[in-house]
Image 1 (cartoon, one colour):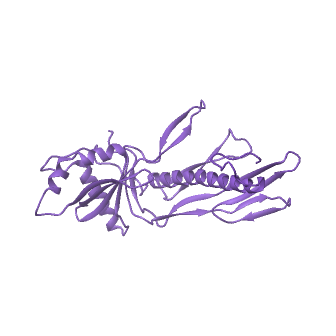
Image 2 (tube, rainbow, N blue to C red):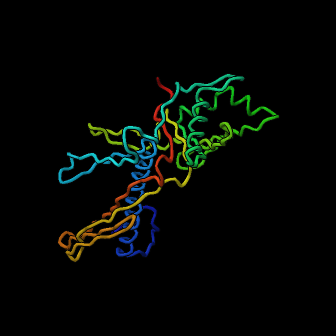
Amino acid sequence: LEKRMAGENLVSELTPEQRERVYLMDDLDYLDKAITRREEWMCAQTMLDNACTMSHIGDKADKAVDLVARYYTGNTNPGVFTKSAVWAIGTATQRGTWYNDVAQQAADLAEKGRPVTDLVVGSEVAEVILSDPWVHAMLDNRREEWGEIDPRWAENGVIRLGTLNFSGIPLTIFCYRGSYQTRNANGTFSTGYYFPAKGAMLAAPATGKVMYGAVTQVEMDHKTYTRAGTRVPKHNVNVDSNQKETILTAKPIAVPLMKGMWRSCRDVLTT
């Protein structure tokens, strides 16, 4: 705390106490982003599987217990669809199998009163759609309006490909390429993707939410408190070693607003 931080002015007048507050804010921001990444993973898994498997870690960190939150009953999962065939492109005069599948799933969701406005696809599925001759022919038609393809980078790994009409239901098509680093069993790191490259999902905004459980913790006065909130901080102090510890805790769970709010398939390009 007595040394200047990276980028700090050579004639800075910051005191150690002021630097401590700067470090604390940076640490809280770092921890908040770490939790946000896990929440994003949880939301992606919930929408892809209509369920989410979470590892509950107790006294032994190497012996986690899997807990599953399922949003359907019975053996039939209304949030997952089975492709009719491997998704492939069509011709200038014939629709591809991918278009027929999307149109069928979108119509089924609409008939059940579920909103559907978006088609989210992985990077490999996006290439199939963009290379489909039928799409090119329909968009070049001067007598019919089938949509528009105008790929644009949005933010946070999202690419907006455009809008297409699926038998009367217009869908905005997004390609999601967000990734993260995951630690393997041998200690090395590899790249993981929130959304599978061969996956596809029909959904709509504001069809789910994230809820938070209360956090119970022992605080500086040695008393136990239960705090409610999206992020619950905790500060520990070791006077003997002149050390402080900051912990940020969250207990999120992603839930749909109604049953069967979306349809997804993790792999539409493989038999």
